[in-house]
Image (cartoon, rainbow, N blue to C red; front, side):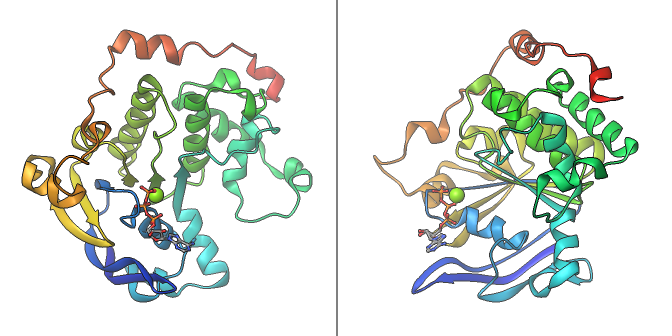
Length: 280
Ligand SMILES: Nc1ncnc2c1ncn2[C@@H]1O[C@H](COP(=O)(O)OP(=O)(O)OP(=O)(O)O)[C@@H](O)[C@H]1O
Ligand SMILES: [Mg+2]
């Protein structure tokens, strides 16, 4: 069980996250929605400790996440993988190496670690790429891949950390609808098959409804909705986003509905490269 207890984050006088309390049972897929500035990213960043809490506490089982230091903190950041809107890959490095970087916590030079990966780790990395349908790209520089492919590399990198939780901060905000669907399907698959808790900030309401068993709505740093999609009524939506004319169309768009055949085509579009070249 993962727990947030009165978690608050201030930046100067600004309260970004205001006394947030909720539990997440292991294996849930949770979508966090809210307007820009509602505190969604800050909340995720506190969970994996990219930001510290100003007050309150975060717990994972018996572990008090919010007070971890040193090696224990690095272990938590390994257990709690995070993916980002902008993928955060090393563009010049090949895809396989980018995935293998998921095995590390912090290293000063990339070159020094290139020879440190075992054959088992390399096989695991290829396995993760296969799982995401992009093993053919293993030897390409990550920067040459499409956005959707890069996000799948980032997910593969997260997977080989063998995390207990996977956090995603607007993972599809930079992607076209087709790639958005592939990435969301991958997150759902990881959640369902491995039982890994997934907590994802989402830009569009329909994506949260379609993929998340539980939706947390934030406004002005506070949780103003917490429940299944079926309870997300128009009144709840207007409390989250504010009512009236400034409710953006894109928040409720259904642009992610793509025919399955098109998704298959996109998954197969990567140019094939022999895995033997990767030394496997
Ligand atoms: N490092 C920071 N320094 C100062 N203020 C910050 C910092 N990070 C976030 N904030 C402020 O905290 C509030 C919440 O920001 P946050 O990025 O968590 O919102 P968000 O819901 O993720 O928004 P978006 O949908 O635009 O990504 C905003 O008012 C933001 O300006
Ligand atoms: Mg954000």
